[in-house]
Amino acid sequence: MDALLIETFRYNKWANLHLLDVCAALSEEQLQLTAPGTYGTVSDTLLHLLSAEQRYLRRLDGTKPDVNEREPAPSIATLREHAVRSGDQLIEAARRITPDDTIDEERDGRLMRLHLGVVLVQAIHHGNDHRTHMCTILGLHGIPYGEMDVWAYGEATGGIVPVTTKA
Image 1 (cartoon, rainbow, N blue to C red):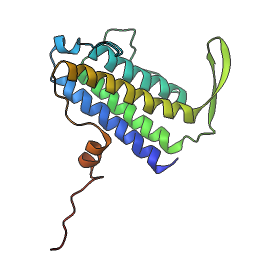
Image 2 (image 1 turned 90 degrees about the vertical axis):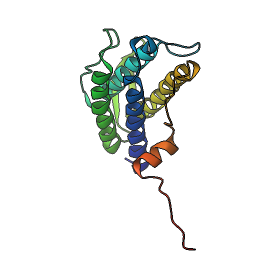
Image 3 (image 1 turned 120 degrees about the vertical axis):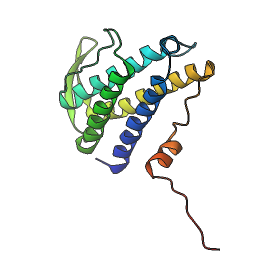
Image 4 (image 1 turned 90 degrees about the horizontal axis):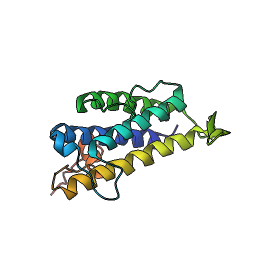
């Protein structure tokens, strides 16, 4: 697949890990914070985001999900391990999946043909959406979370570097 899609999934993994590292420093009380218009608590949103990534991977490569939002949330450290693994698997899926690849799955009681390119796009959209929810919660409660936009990713990974000019 396209190198830009692969880079997009590298950003997704980096942003997830950045937010998990921020959350690792939070108290249990802070992980239970929420805000109007968001998915739920910080903890619930993290678990939902990573559970969904694993459901996307089940569609993309048959991987059995090992995080389930119907069970109690594991520790942030355990969620981070899952985020590393699912992030790497999504990057690999972006390398090999084409928009024409399909699977058949039941949705709303009907058998549907699902183009896997749509699954990849949904994974990116879903991650951005819920990371934004968590940043809204943290910001509302005055908890700093640092920079995690694509510019910060570029600076952190060498995609944006200072240039010295000759005088």
